[in-house]
Amino acid sequence: MKRIEFHDREEEIKEIKNILEREPSLITFIYGPINSGKTELMSYAVKQLPEDYAIFRINLRGRFIRGYEEFLDVLFDIDEERRERNAKEYAKAILKDLKLIGGIPIPLNLFERMFERKERSKDVFKYIESFMEEISQKYVPVLIVDELQVIGDVKIDELLIYKLFNFFIRLTKELHLCHVFAVSSDSLFIEEIYSEAMLQGRCRYLLVDDFDYNNTMDFLENYEFSDKEKGDAWYHCGGKPVYLVELINHKLGGGNTKEKAEELLKVRITQLRDLLDELNYVRPVVEIAGEQYRVEKEKVIEILKLFMDRERVDFELHRPAKHFLVKKNILFVDPMGGEVRPQSRLDLLAIRELVKV
Image (cartoon, rainbow, N blue to C red; front, top):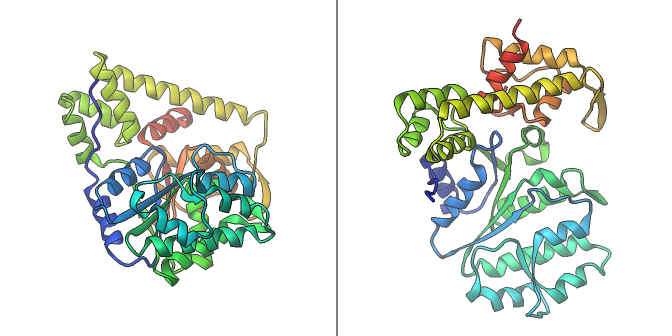
């Protein structure tokens, strides 16, 4: 079986390495359209780091977190073999075995103790800070949180996300102790935190977008696509990595890439047509700043029609309809660029097919 190789992300990798070579000072938000390769990029980048970096990765993707206990289960990597009295002693004990870990290591006895205390969130952050302080004596700690928006609505006395933000600010800007990367495909979440006053001057944003034309052509060249096959792929799928990989796999299996691209488009058109038809019968509700607003089909179509003659539009649109389309992964919001665009070339073509007169 031929493996699809990681393809040219030199600019993004250079930026991540530049961040990691400097003293921790800001939270870094990695954002972009769905399936643009954000998680793969971070995985590839950290694998290139020297051995004096300690990577702690927390993946919230696909996790249903309703409260504190479920959050702790994801946050920590429980060690049932060692029993230590505090975070620093434990960190010293595991230093020689440290590698890329899917959570913050913690001995079982300390983990259980956190459930017994009233100020549990304070205990969690105190433990992590002490642990990172000890680890930093030998390594450069790097904390990566994938799909952070999953806990956006979780409350522990107050919203957990704000407690985390404050803690991340402490780890980076105040203590310069640990690099923190938050990865998210939820552009509404990025839009919200971009306007969050508490994060002004305390974070940076790195866009990981779909491939541009030249990178797409180079990527497909590696799998012996003809010029016509490349043109068909770009027309239907643009530079969306996940769709390009699907075309490559289809070609490697002896299939016709144009037929596959047309099939992908047909499926997307059907999905969007069904979504619009559903709006004839239901009035979805979206929440904005704690208030609920009904989504009107007319406003949804009004926004979609804007893409008949352009690929991106101004940031300011009817907000409930915009939120609905973003939540359904049809549109992507880029607050840094002040624009809204379809999640992919495939979505753009499907939108134009549905709303054309």
